[in-house]
Amino acid sequence: MAKATFGAGCFWGIEARFRQLEGVTSATVGYSGGALVNPTYEDVCSGQTGHAEAVEVIFDPETVSYDALLDVFWSLHDPTTLNRQGPDVGSQYRSAIFTHDPEQDSTARASKERLQNTIGPGREIVTEIAPATTFYRAEDYHQQYLEKDRGRRRLF
Image (cartoon, rainbow, N blue to C red; front, side, top):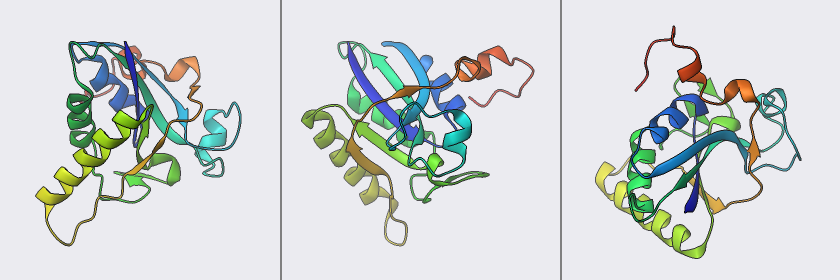
């Protein structure tokens, strides 16, 4: 098994989409990329921790490649908006790829460059690519939130 960590705005929909992929054994919502140890949702929402809402994906690379996960990541949000996804504004909603080894780093950078070449001038991909640091699991009520709240409109 391998691990991938992505930030692409509100983590609920991102988690739900990754959980649907064949080869993904788990997707967990949480916080990554900041300085505060053991942040809470309220801490992260303050915008003062440096953390992004993120999803940690455990996957079988024999079934789904890291490159395929990156394709899904890019499709789930607008990587050209800085610290914003839809109505959610703040650094905690930034587009980020937290890499777990040098191979993931080079694959992520190549993927970003390929996408940048397709969108043309005037729009720059602002996605942060940085080494993964400690991933802090979000509170239980955030895990599989969209599956728990079946009354909500399906996002994916």
